[in-house]
Image 1 (cartoon, one colour):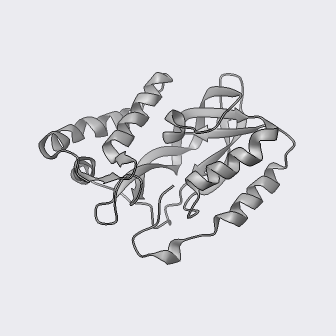
Image 2 (cartoon, rainbow, N blue to C red; image 1 turned 45 degrees about the vertical axis):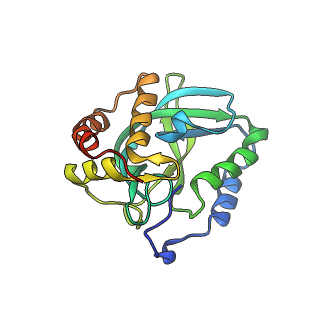
Length: 208
């Protein structure tokens, strides 16, 4: 979860009706799958009955969401990943037993949806045991938290300086790449971005 741009309180949305709407659509008749594409891979913070590698078509992982609390500050914004439309994305899906879903989703909303910056969606995820429908947190390009295109120079600057209450943007991106590798998933774009940014980090070092 991340806040919208500094002082832009008009960007806040109420997460409560979004949670109520999601639970109503889910209906309570079956287990729930949740798609993880970044920190949910290496820190899900909930129990699950099954984990599978998965691929979503029509959406891709992108380090293009401003972070002014967790991985940066209002004065020095950092970045977190978003699931943006277009392309495809490899990640993992977790199966949460039906009776645990209301509690798990409520806690997930507190983590990801404090300001309701994401658009929760049910996406088709292909796994080696067949497709499943999974809850995924996507970001609109119309959101004020969407960065737009960033230059390699800007990424280097952010990696070398942005740090929030949960640590640096660089460590967040590195942990995501390492967790993907542990699941046998490659992300050449992220690997290249981290490699290009090493020079800036080596010269400047992370700063709070």
